[in-house]
Image (cartoon, rainbow, N blue to C red; front, side, top):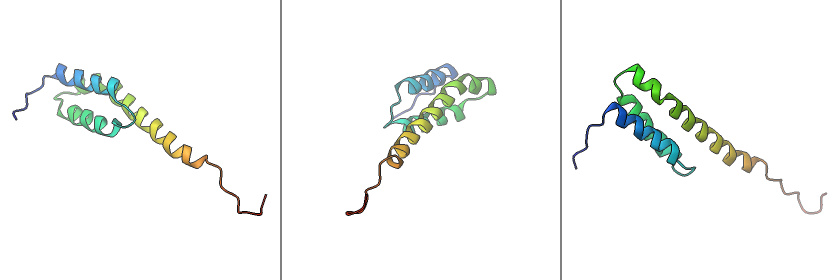
Amino acid sequence: MKLPMLSSDDKQTEIRRLYFETTRSTIQEDLAKALDLLKSMNSEDERERATVYMEGMAQMRAEWGKNKVGSQKLKPKRKPQGQR
């Protein structure tokens, strides 16, 4: 399968799409795709335009990861039988 060459605007649009469509279960893969697109951009100006979406996805990943770990830490520990 032949892959099309994406223009700078197409890359920006794809990163934006990934940002708005990512979910807790797809964040890792979506962030990896967005990072590959970001790395393929030719100029610093192009990368700066995508920064807001990249930072947003990184924040989502951090928050969703925190909730997952945090919920496990907040579970009460079982007391041994016979103790109060």
